[in-house]
Amino acid sequence: MDGSRKETPMTETPAAPLSADLDLIQRIIPHRYPFLLVDKVRDIVVNESCVGIKCVTMNEPQFTGHFPGMPVFPGVMIIEAMAQTSGILVGLSMDLVDKNAKVFFMGVDGVKFRRKVVPGDVLELHVKALRGGGKVWKFEGRAMVDGELACEATFTAMFDLPKA
Image (tube, rainbow, N blue to C red; front, side, top):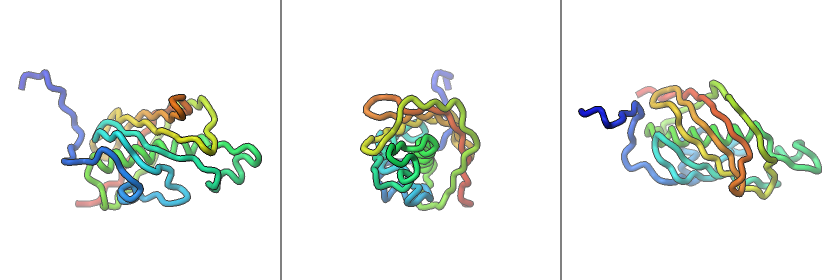
């Protein structure tokens, strides 16, 4: 080897899809309504990045209390949606479809909220893997609405991988 190729410790998955619909999402992460916050995923590059889509609608239960008369999608739920999107990326990157893997937050850093997210908005959840390949992964995430930054954060998650 001449040293010019950058090696990555991340596991490769053959023939990973470029997108994930709701059925595939539910085969990767354990979240279900009302806490499943990703409707679909596109632009998947295994071990690297993807974009989750969350269509924010008025009939979601959090809007009865956050806030009455002025519905605002909670910031912590935006961060959770980014985390769920990253869980889908890891699931596809590590061939965890139908393997009942669990994911847990370890840390969230540098969170900044830039705009309100309201019913009718479509959140684009851009996540990029900064470090990973095993049980612990680190990501940067950006939540966008109509090309405008709504939230940004870096976060770390631990994956409880199924026994072989």
